[in-house]
Amino acid sequence: MSYLHPYQDVDFVLRKVVDFDALCAAAGHDEINADLAATILSEAGRLGSEVLAPLNRVGDREGAKMGAQGVEESPGFKDAYRQFADAGWLSLTVAEDFGGQDLPNCLGTAVNEIWHSANMAFALCPMLSQGAMEAIGHHADDALKALYLPKLATGEWTGTMNITEADAGSDLAAIKTKAKPAGDHYLITGQKLYITWGDHGMTDNIVHLVLARLPDAPPGVKGISLFIVPKFLLDAKGEPGERNAVNCLSLEHKLGIHASPTCLMDFTDAVGFLVGEPNNGLAYMFTMMNHARQSVGLQGLAISERAYQEALQYAKDRLQGTRRDGSRIPIIEFPDVRRMLMTMKSCIEAMRVLALVAAAEADRALYATDPAVAARHFARLELYTPIVKGWLTELAQELTSLGIQIDGGMGYVEEAGAAQHYRDARILPIYEGTTGIQALDFVGRKMLANHGETLLALLTEMEQTAAELRSTPYRYGSVVKAFEAAVAAGTRARQSLLDGAAADRHLAGSASVNFLMLFGYLCGGWLMVKSAQQAQTMLDAGEGDPQLLTAKLTTTRFFCEHLLPRTGACLASVLAGSESTMALTVEQL
Picture 1 (cartoon, rainbow, N blue to C red):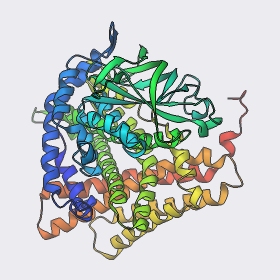
Picture 2: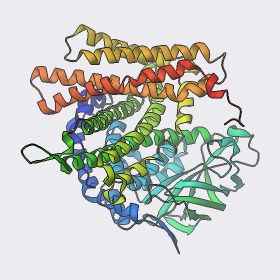
Picture 3: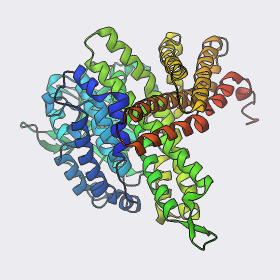
Picture 4: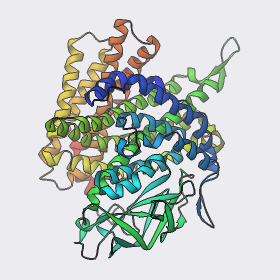
């Protein structure tokens, strides 16, 4: 159950694919470079492996529970959180004006992978705080920013996102929580469920971001406002004072992430403060949700990495069978075990490079001085977000399951640890918008809404990469062939939806998940190919670690030969249309 940060692969991606130094230079951050990033990641890796990872099993066995004073966190979590906060990890990407370090988002993403691999249930708490800071920083007035952002940045307080209600899951138009004006504040009444880290005793205050309706709000999603509702109201000095009317009524009993309290929250005339303008709350909350969606995608990568490390060690240690000389054979020598390990390793590398490249698009959009350049990078970020959230989390289901399969019967036994990764991973395609919701967003808002132009720009870049492969000597012809076929599949799938969506009202909905998965594999394969190009260049120049670089060439080859062909199956489903999907009556189903 130990964990070590895969620093070599992360460092390679930041330096050679993201081009971290150029990104920082373009932003005017001359003091920030890949060497500094390596130092930061080293320190984060130490905290992750030495402090957080040992608590992962503890939290699974002894999850959060209700006590007389509210939610009690798992043993050891409070001390670990204090070490985490005191070291300044929550402030990495926060603006300097609010006590942050103002480091690039892609570096923050690389660091966050460590927390989620080491202890995903723990890492959900700072993840929600980071999302709350995003929403407050972008949309609250200066007074609210000054009151809440510095304490969130230091980790003295934590943040939450309160959206879901019993009759309003993904259908936010059905939200019933009310907000009544009361002088300089509002009184919030209603209940929210599935609130991650909605209550605990690790900090002096919890800052809830709550969606609610004003008395004169229009119906539907256009009538939702966003409010800050603190657990403790602030006194004249800005410190926690009187207890607000916010309470956790119960905790959910979950399949996994037992140490992360999932709360039913009650607000009964709780004092809240309006964020931004009335009735614009959904747009504001999407700032937090989009941050969370990229973070949840990162969780898919992180939990897969943890499962891979466990499976790899088991495969090295487990002896099964005997050679002719009488020595025992570790199962890592068996071809089928190698197949599973290579599937895990190559997919994890593809997931990682996609997550970091997507995070870098947020930086480039923020730092760009030309509005047109900023808009182009933001459009690419918007395109990547549902892929990162949907593809990485769905793939994590397969990879954590393979971890159990490699362990065999021991994998099915809880004491071995592999089962926890599988259970913890299962929530990822569900929360912050299910895979179906991500897929509809990808097809509708990110593709059909602009006639596929943003997606076409991405496909054009991929075709340029394919042309580079064709025009230069490359060691693996199978990579070129598989990549070209996958790009062709993406191009055909795009045109098929553009041509057929208007005539078939069910086409987008029935084809969307396979369309999203197609582009997940395609984007992963593209960035693996670009990684391999960089690795080959370094090898030709005699630079870097040959063992690392040749391994990168091999994992790219494996991904292209064994995973990229899945784009063909996804394309076949997209081309099949919606007829058989919708053919049966409800009674027949």
